[in-house]
Image 1 (tube, one colour):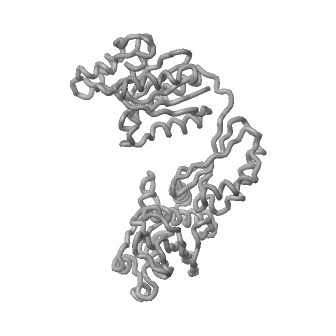
Image 2: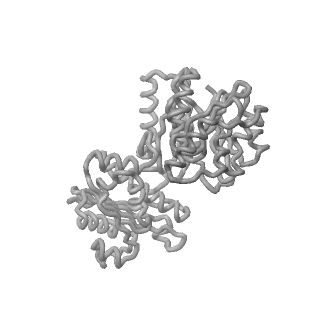
Image 3: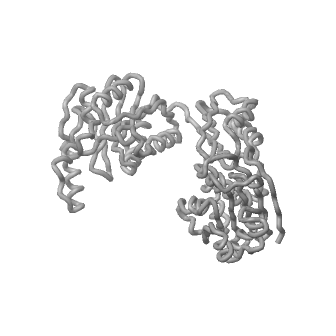
Length: 429
């Protein structure tokens, strides 16, 4: 099946809002054996919309058009499709009745402008929207089906799950399952990863791709045709062996997601003590529902005074070795674990820049420690000459990986690649 998507709206085209709808649709389709061939973004201009719709005709089997079904003058999707088909808009009485009932149930009067949302191209098939006032519709032009949905994410998702996918599976043969295996890495550049993986032969029907999005580079193995299970397993094992410590998860959206799942599975608790990352480690975990099962506290101890009063860091350690030192992060992690009563505690203190570095501790120098019942392990990494936010993001990622590795029974300190270790310290309980 040749599937394309058109996303409409000036706010999407201009970057005022991020188009998360298209990414969600593409991923869901892939999971259901359908690969998106092309995606187009077009503004709220009639001529551009008609041209974009026409461009897909006869090339695609199905085009998902997202957006432009609202009640205002700049919602032009239905009218543009009618122009392309050479038909007029007609009132869909069934949807007008449904929409009127929605407003009545909410105790709100329905504006005359909402009537526009029940106007569909003549001959179109209405598509139900169970959570919004704009119905969708599908229409055929030159052997290409166009499936229209509102741009509101909650409405799109319900309609794709309940309307689009069942219709696709019924109307079109999906000949072979398309599989996507994602390998999440940190600490290696994209070109270096490509060079490391180049000697590994790919089975026929498998293609390799990369997606860079700080702090990760995601390796994508796309199975366009069915591959024998032994060949697929051998390929994944070969990739894992070459990637080593740089591989931090498979088929995950993020490293915090891996930590989150492991913490809940093992029933352990965690406290964080952060300086330069300003609570980023804890915040990324709190983004995930259920983090209250294990995250006891996230302490942002930015000043030396806070490190002393909240975590018990010794004034001698700060005076002798400085806030960015192995001694300080060890005492931060130990203090957080002892005071919060957690199984694990991770700490960070570093120089995120753009100022504050020195010859001995340049900007990008970050110290980490992980405390547990077995003791405390600490390291200093140089994360490179980067922007302030990039250093903070990389630092939070390393902290999460130390926790992940400890939960898996692996050494918490990993060799990533470009993030060079300049010091370590180990304290046994």
